[in-house]
Length: 433
Ligand code: URA
Image (tube, rainbow, N blue to C red; front, side, top):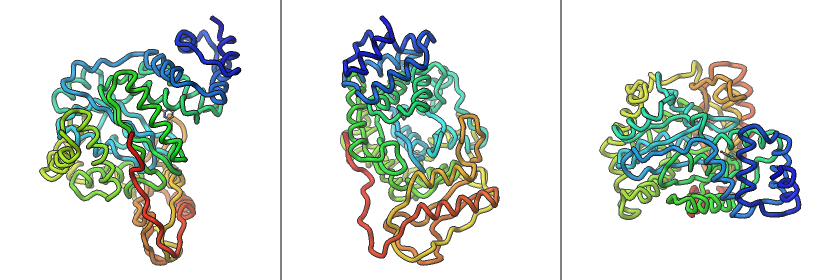
């Protein structure tokens, strides 16, 4: 088999066979096929697209390019959750202890933030001492003992995706539905869960800006998961403005804690309960939607979800007192208000811009190696549809550097638009697959 022939076949609109896909993945990972040939193939795929069968084979070849985690040592149906990423998306921080408190074993691999989106691992590191560098053994033991563990992705998990993603990133071939679906699902399948709930984001802060594209991506990923024998569910949810109020690592941790105390923002709470419901149903813990909601609300009201968060933080070396005492979380030296430049209704907030403003404060990475400031970020006091008077606070900004704060504030204000007429309510959950 020759890579040249595969490139030519795809370029001319042909369908690659399972053997051809396995050939290119195996030989790309072992270094036999060079980047320039794979770049050419990615570009051919970008223009010619892939069939469902090809997308499935690519996913499986990438998943099996490294270690396939065997979670059979963990009792119960393991339900994973994956978000395609966004701004203020602290869902895993509240959702995982909540469903663990309801009896779902949570054995989750998470990532760090990159670009304008945040990552669960960075956020969790706001708890002093917290570590996600667990061995597989510790990971399994923690799940069996307290029902929850989150670790960073091991170097050997879907290495083909790691290499391909880095290549796509620099060859303008990221935004192809089959390539995104196979990239995400290869990692999820290799992580070993029995069931997967996907939160596919759409809007200005998401990867899929258009709703129709988000639906198509969700459908494709659900099909792949089902073909691989996993139980699947996907929600398509709004990311046209930041989720909840907090954007920034430690601020988001606080908001997740408030949500487990029953006093979280409305949209974030709604999303956590909606995803939690799907997880409890797929995990066989709840009989129906109402039963799932009752269990989730019960775990918040009786404090067991918050208690689970403390156990989880402690089991991974963090200081559990920070769950009760927010002063133990990283805190920026300056907290100020950003006053509204005019009176009216907030009509839109360019979501990725808010993520970039947080990055400008030091709250995200420019490169994979950059250090991040966990304490900085924004607390949105006005969101789309809210009325604001001139001079009233639109948001709070938390910073450690006056110049960065000034620049970020100017850019933050440009992300907001106003109108005199009340805009229509936006729907948080746009669909279910
Ligand atoms: N996230 C991934 O893991 N892969 C993609 O291709 C896009 C988003």
